Amino acid sequence: MMKTNKIIALILCLVLLVAFAAACNRDKDNNGDSSSDGQQSSDGEGNLPPLSDDPLDGTIEVWCWDPALSIYAMSEAARIYKDINPNFDINIVEVSWNELQTRLSTISSTGALDELPDLFLMQDNAFRKNVTSYPELFVDITGSDIDFSQFSEGKLSHSTINGRNFGVPFDAGTVVNALRTDVLEEANLRLSDFTDVTWDRYIELGKQVLAETGKAIYSDIHRDTDLLMIMLQSAGANLFNEDGSINIADNAELKQAIGIFVELVESGVCHMVDNRDDYIASFVSGEVAGVINGCWVLGTIQGATGQSGDWGITNLPKMNTPGATNYSDYGGSSWVLTSSSRYKELSLDFLENTFAGSVEFYEAILPSSGAVGAWLPAGRSAVYQEPHAFFGGQPIYANIADFTSKVPSNNSGVYYFEARDAVGAALARILDGADIDTELQSAHNQVSSSMG
Image (cartoon, rainbow, N blue to C red; front, side, top):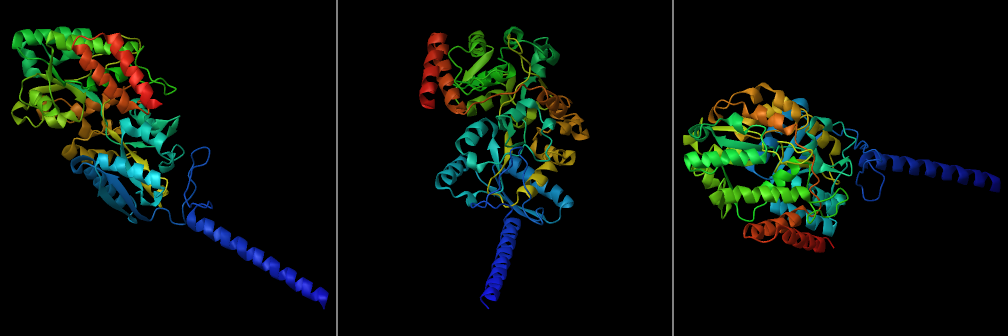
């Protein structure tokens, strides 16, 4: 009898063990991860495990800003993707850039990762700092089906950290040199005279325009460093070394860029203003005959309706340094997949079939938003090739797409904004006559101190 009882007890134990194992397997299937926090992570190769039995069915939430650009583009992307996947839906929440940064900081400090959306938009120049500061919020998407080789090296470098991809590029901030062609004609010049030139040649031509028309061909804001950052990236240089250490005091490219800037101002080729409103007014009003900035500035230029047909674009002047190019990037943003997303596969499939894979999508958003995509195949579309009446019939979007493909990569650094502001303060003092080496050393020390 005792032996029979032992056999029955053994059978019951085996039954319980089998039931327990089955329950564990069901848990793993339902949650997509057997870890205690329920979050998914990629494997060593960046490959994402399956999320559920039906991962492409659900509603994703997206945070972004700018109704005329990013929100509009996301809405159009959702419309196009629903034709591919009718089980998809989207909830777009308008969140300003400053508010987004505050939310990320708060969520990271409190550990409330479940408050994150599935996707959010990230400014490119802030990408490295955010991934470094809040790594638990981001997902390594290197092993996804998205073909990152179809984005320019310069654009992709912002969201690539230690060789891994953490974002899907959206809008290009490709730099253009926009000029008033009617003013150039008064000086017996053409747009082609400013194409593929050095900064020395640009200043020579600018002096000719100033002498013949009384107009500067460029304007800038006191203490602003936009042009310096544009110059550095065009030469494949920046304010940080590859290991993340600060590179200001002995930065030969930075010293050359500051020297060019000083000459632009002292020659009268650059008209200095006090604030952004005056900067915009300077070229919209016709006070100056040109603009050098990210291609997003073209929308502002077109606000001067009376100047339609009198503008054209070409590439950026280049520095006199090895590896320098006539191409750069300033601005733009990329999409981020969050670590707590319930719909990782759905979100990635959505991005792969729109922002990273649909000519139709980029053709749809271009006419209304002027958003030039960073996805290179979009530049070969018929819509991008169409002449633009405001810019003298130039196919400006095809031109920008071509420029985008040639932008060098850039390491903006974790302390990009601190370094940029320190250099801006140094530039203001240099323009007032201070010694360049002394000021750059001071800026270097200031940023070094803030880095700890």
